[in-house]
Amino acid sequence: MVANSRELDAAVAATRFGLGAKAGEIATAAADPRGWLKAQIRPEGAETFDMGGDTGATRLAAFREYRKQRQAAKQGGDGPGKAAGDEDDAVKMARQFIRKEAAGDVAGRLQLAVGTDAPFRERWALFWANHFTVSATKVQVATLVGPYENEAIRPHVFGRFGDLLAAAETHPAMLLYLDQAQSIGPHSRAAEFLAAGGRRPGFGGGKRAGGLNENLAREILELHTVGVDGGYTQADVTEFARALTGLGIGGPRDMAFEDKVVFREPAHEPGPRTVMGVKYPDGSARAQAGAVLGDLAAKPQTAKFVCTKIARHFVADDPPPALVARLQKTWMATGGDLGRVAATLIDSPEPWSAPPTKFKTPYEFVVSSYRAVGFAPAQAGPQVNGVLNGLGQRPFGAPSPKGWPDEAAPWAASDAIVKRMAFAQSLGGRMGPNVQDPMALADATLGARLTPAAATAIRRAESRAEAVALLVMTPEFQRR
Image 1 (cartoon, one colour):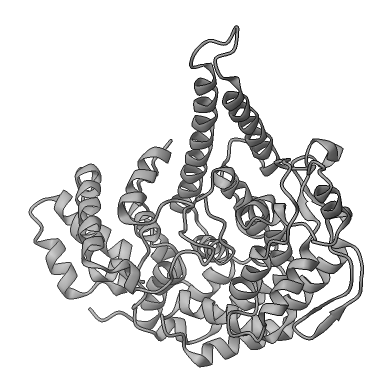
Image 2 (cartoon, one colour; image 1 turned 135 degrees about the vertical axis):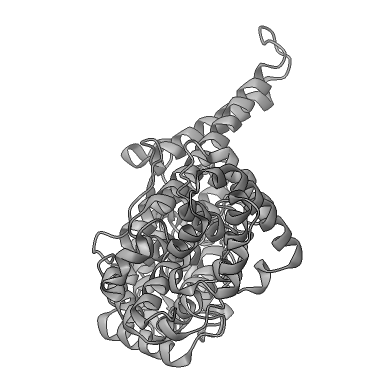
């Protein structure tokens, strides 16, 4: 039977714009595929996932305690009254806390993705979380990645880009990940104090001399706003880094702002700044940093760079120029209204007509597989961590600030396919006996995208377990 255009659009809506169809989703979308997607755009942003009531501030406080225990353990030695191994036990317990909280965040995020009835909204949120990557590659950041995504990213994904940019760059997780919390203006009052032997206040303390750190400024320009070809120079990076000095995290001396973002004027580099040809007068840390971020958010180079990434994510590794131009036009006309940009994406012809060449990342593969078979693992942190580690995408562990690659080649190597086959066989063995009709499952999962060749292979499977494994390993399922 030849599918009509609405049936195919419904399958595309669920598998390209969404996270892979779950039971009944393609049928629901078929009534109005574009309307179904647009209804998922909402001003309040994307749902947050369960973190057991924790926030970034509570996690920071816990990490501060971990550091105290670690320091006490290092200094404890074998002094009187101290049992051997006490210090090791304290540090071990702190590390276990970090691993437990991080694993819980992974499980909460996965359960949201597997169960959501608004998969486009979730995919859109995941795109922005990857764009503004914060990775758990540092111990002090490991428990903050979940709060960062919930607090800085998800509430703003359909709002103004400038608001999302400011929230992401000033969250404690980003400040720690890119070492901004350590950056001090070389000619600031704080630098003079430290040079005279003073102790640095705030998160982490320490007697190290103050110094300028350019990491955050560089990544904002290169990865988050105008892009590497956006026209900035090394001098702009340095000037922007100077404008950002004073932006840090409150410590015990900051009273009500402990474990929260603060702007410390004594650490701010005095003087006017010039960034990408724009002059900023001498002023407070908050004023200078905010002004530069606001101007970067409004630049046409930012619109082009980010809209190119959106088109690449949703359509093709080589983004269609017409789609990029259309998204950029909406961006500039609305002041970076991401809800309007999302609607323009949905209304554009390219996502609906392009062949399915986008190869799923391991996370997308696991989520879409679970959605297909209706498997929502409870308390799945350790299990999912192991699965994704094995497939090459450590949860919350992107290898660099650039985030996870969005092109097919890094995920489609032969050894990666072998690992996916092992996952598919395991999933089939677990869920296959519950599947009454494998062909009905294939139709519900891929809809009009199911090819005759794939249907024949699934129909000829020797068992329901094998049929499920074959379904999730079909080219149609692996690509979106």
